[in-house]
Image 1: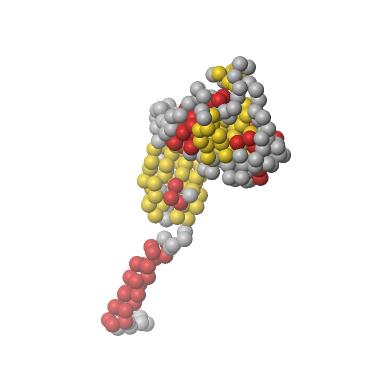
Image 2: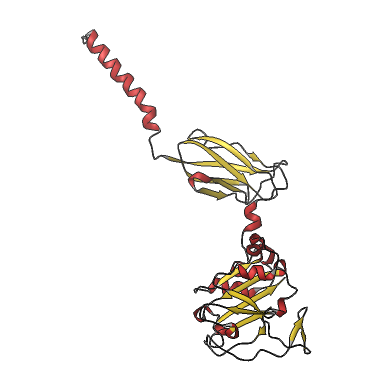
Length: 285
């Protein structure tokens, strides 16, 4: 016998079923669900591109293509995103995708092009974080090693740092050094740091001492300077050296590759400890 369902009950059942069906898609795309986006990167000859960078930057997701140009970017939440494809030597491509629909992508074709990224120019890649232009040389290793391991209040200036200062004269460069004071005393420069006078400051140029050390840790050291002065960076025995900046007389700020400043005895590198109360090391280009 066929069961009788009243019109009112029938309308209630239909409304409930419609509500269930309407709610189903919302449940299928519930918050927190993620998918893996699959794809392949090739060139115009349909050859695979290995090592291409695949990312969705706002989500912090990234991967690289394998030897077959394939990639899997896992953990992509449902929604609309911009997928970035980058490879040095090829033009960049950004693709708008909507997941979960676009979880499997058509091959991405990269076209060769001269692409210069700012991050490539400024990044450090060498030993002790040497800049890329010096990464495969041994130049200025001492400077970068001391900078890497210094835990005191020493200051390190690279050529890039000096260039950003916009100064021309070497003395103007020194004027930018915090706590360093200097003045002219009858044509000769007198340097001082707080608690450390002219005679106690060790100055080196390209690893060679050009201004004598005073008594260890003394703030009023009076050890006589070396007898040789300098002309264009070369010793001149016919003159008396009484100016610590004489070796830098012809040097411009742009001639400086790097400079280290140790304003206190506690900040000194190990080779200067006990022999000075401050130090300035300059490296020319």
